[in-house]
Length: 132
Image (cartoon, rainbow, N blue to C red):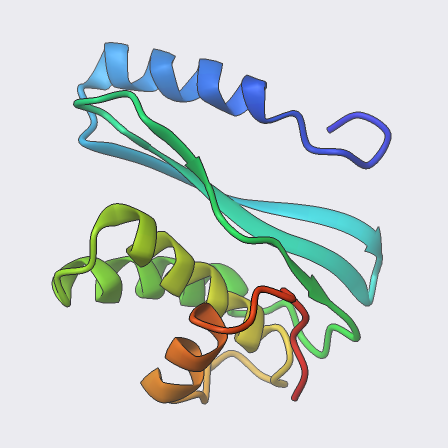
């Protein structure tokens, strides 16, 4: 990150190195742009180890952040849920980012949203704004 902007090429380079060294099927990272303690940009990226295709998700503008605790767990659970449900890796990533963005709007450790909530946000109008 330089001057508040994500430099995605750095992720491409690191992901390629990780795939070369460890043979991962996918490499995934969540990406936070911190504008303030209660105002963040939230997205993620993934690389397919076989094709080396890199994909950057939609970015959500989360404000106000109610609680960051559990956001990473919600992201990981969203990736797993999406893949187990048979989504392609891009759709699984979008599902995970939406689940995690919603978690940022809920106090406490647990993501108390439904699949329908996540699907609604992930398949939304593209505004990327989380409102609860």
